[in-house]
Length: 241
Image (tube, rainbow, N blue to C red):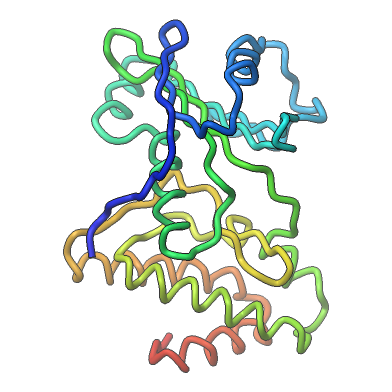
């Protein structure tokens, strides 16, 4: 196994000091309008805001393609720019790993673009654009129900299958909160790929995968009925917890 994202069709352009890779389906007019937005005037109560946290802003925006999710990040000091420039900036990481996941039949919102600007040759600002998916978080899906229902069994099985595929691909997510899985028609869709990593050695890949797995199981600490169902489903794949 190796990390080789398959990106079948992409256009590369520059707008000002922004480097952009995007799907041909996403119009240049929409991208220009995105860069013209005055972010300093956006308040957390704005209906387009999905999340504001730790230097990042996530917006739900309209487009000719339907609703899109746009995630903006800015490195506001030299230290942050140096750290982010040594590795992949989160927008590019999201872009590459989203294509990789879809290539390996793991659902994630369709990636449409990433945009990167630099200052003093260092990564400064970025956007990641993907389709907006309407669904319950895995946390809401399970914990809002007072008891485990028969219809949830297929969802548990699908999430476990996703974990097994991630293991086979030697990638870790790095932040397996239940809120980072969306449930759409009882199927999981993985989001928030900022920390996702491919591990070249099987030993490290297995350790990081186990860390993801134990982090995920912590979500059900107070719900023994849900915890039991996941343990049974993993056991069918020979995974003991």
